[in-house]
Length: 211
Image 1 (cartoon, helix red, strand yellow):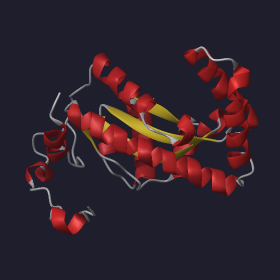
Image 2 (spheres, rainbow, N blue to C red):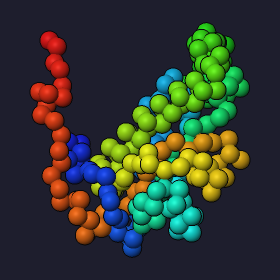
Image 3 (tube, rainbow, N blue to C red):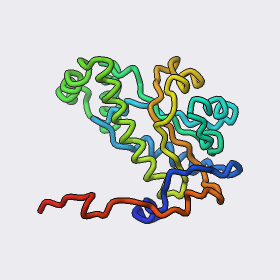
Image 4 (tube, helix red, strand yellow):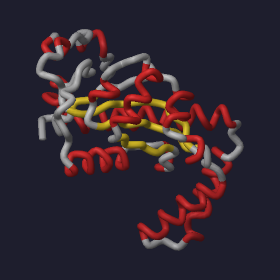
């Protein structure tokens, strides 16, 4: 496990993965756990992760990924999806989980539950989609950092066709919609981008300190 700053210095958006390198079951399980532990608004987790380890399907996704070959080369492809079932029943289920995990009576949570429903259930489908999508971006940030700390390479992608992914992976049948993609694996030894110096603004320009 790397020091977090060292890990972030080491991380870059991989342009070429080692196609022969695999990730262990322990590594993949850790990725799943990091996804599940990410912060999300109200803790509601309005998303799911599809972890794809199927070269035939990865090949089918290539034309829907602007032919970015990382999708095929990677040991696994993570597809971050928003859920379409965030409604009153979903919130009831979430509070049932809270009551069970913390040994609280369901009735003691009614005030917060009703507040959450009044905040979320009235959103339009477009507003709900935007809210859930924002939570996915939070999650990808968590997962990029977690992967770097575990020396698992990654490449975050917005450049793909959500409709194409939805069709190939039949996400509509699961009530899901693809939002972000992240191939993970091990960088190729001849990925020329790996040796480039990371470029960031000076701290004094990037950060405003008010004391």
